[in-house]
Length: 435
Image (tube, rainbow, N blue to C red; front, top):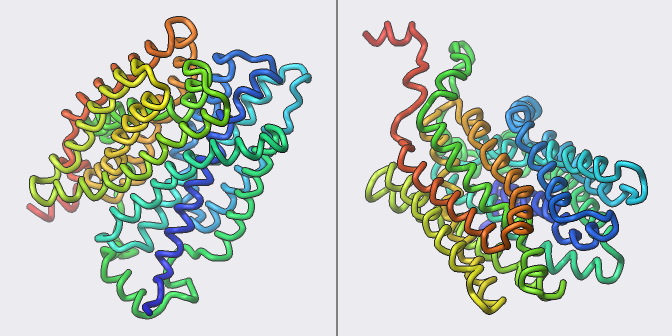
């Protein structure tokens, strides 16, 4: 029986860390009804708490990328997961009766968002050193599938824990899982395959054969072309499309559980059960999207393979968001909306792939700039959705998300993954030599 490659074990660890990250960021919505009651909040104020996480996450994206490069994925992720654990635990320790309890709760979730910003930059840093190019699409699909698993298991798992031990136990459990995983990652992982004692010579050869040779140390590297990045039509369109992706995704991550409880009048156990549907769909469609994009690219070119899934996934999602709230049966509505969010995640790999296509050695920075978009979108929907639902009804809140999704689909038409930013940033000496 063939020995399992060490890189496969470490990718599975990153999948688990991705799932834990979403456990820690979505547990607040499962405990939401209890927090609303105990802290005497309304949905809009709970939306501020959810938005705080995303604001912290967005503000620290570029810094997180720099830390991942500076410390390496082993230490960066270990410290980050311990940070998550601390602030997840702190969420449960905020006293409801203290003055300005809401402000403290917002500060705690803001801090959690700052720590969680490291997860995907550090994962990308690992992929760059460990994963051969032909395997990267599959590997990224596996890592991002942790989103669906983590967010999908959160409702039934935490609801069961809270039913016995109270809502704070959900945060104690989440914190404990995070700390254990962070310590395990530190002992299992290494920043490069050369440093791992369990990597076989055959696996090392496979990794080296599939990774482009690094630049020689003596080669002068150009600085980060901030002006080119921030004025690129493709980067701007991609960031806006990603903003709309985040807006729609966080309706499900932040409010779907409460929508089922408040608009569909399901009890907590039933709401938890039906809340799993979107995240099962996210897991399946996230894996499918990467394979589909590569298949289309190999037959009809890079622009079709990247932009096609991005355009059609947002357009189809808009349709499901319009139809879902109008379905009379609660189970049918949950299933319809679940397919909508699943279809949205067909495009997940396209966003990250385009940044690699156009940016070359600046892919980390460009992807960080792009990834600010969905965090702003998520922060906006976390506060705007409950306000729209309270003032105009849940159907109007989902309709607004559908309009946003259509705008995002149109933005994909302006994305061109075949135009590289690096061409505009080549050193003048290199250009002169070429002439």
